[in-house]
Image (cartoon, rainbow, N blue to C red):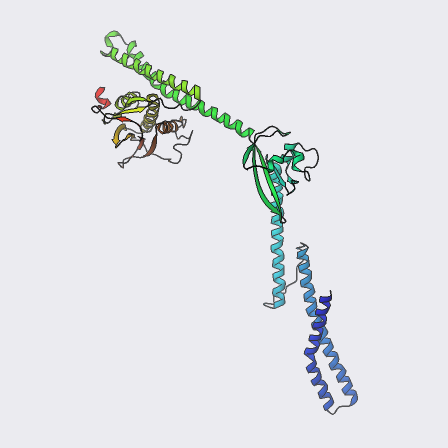
Length: 460
């Protein structure tokens, strides 16, 4: 107030001093001119009155503007954004109008920001109350300064949770040790396990600790359920892959036996022996495969043994009878690998290729292999429509087939990787339509003695 009084006094003195020269000139003219005493006194009084009145009007105008600006700023400081100054739109660039316009604009901006802050704060409180995660904030003394409904249920606080210390609530362990980590602690809401996350923040310059506790029991139960579903689907997929050719061969043999003896093929006994041999091998391989899954509930480690590539390829290709499958002659190679798992791998690849070719007319599947230095590569090439979706090829349970399971390629890749190899799918390298599945075994032990194997068509 003293500064304000001094400012106003100084303003009055400045205004009076500004008009003093003109007043002196006017009074001097009155004295020098030939006027009566009455005229001199009247005119002198009038000039002095005009001088004082002008100073008063200027003072009132300036101080009134300052008081209005002060009131507007005080309203902003009190967060009252409803007060506005009246601005003459015709004033143009008049300084006072510009200042008042800027203050009005500042009030509008602060009002919008305050409304946004209120809405964000309301949303934050709503989210904290609705989420099923315990959120607590502690000050430096370990006193609870913020807690949501989930935190209250966690510690079963009968009264107000705020203002209580962490030790009395059984939460002292949450403020110690590393984070994030899994915390196995018994709370009134359950025994956990709980996922603990902790971070630091400041509120009004004071450091606080934010603690988030998530109940992992529901997530673990869901993961367990999904794991069982995956296991059942994998087993069902592999069982169907082995039973389908067994059923097909058994049906063909039954049809031959149903014919009169005179109409039966001359090589029926050979067909019976070959078919039963295939059924026996597939049944035995499937039995071993399922037994290993039952023991380990996962893909078993490979049981390494010699695998003749030519015999392996021809044996698996013979199971696919829907479309023509050609085996191109390759070098005589013996792999040190798990024969049963390689059967499953190649069955899946040939089956996928045959499914693609079955949708086209006149297409076929080609299987070939080669050696690249010490690496063995096998390719399954089809004349199908090609790859329409490449980003999800090896995503478990993703499939574009109406009756597909999305397991075959994933399992085939796992088998290849268990043999220190890789499985890739890409468009055909020769530019033709179709897909090429390539299996690379870069660290398998190879034996390359002996002549190349013949095409499977030569044996039929």
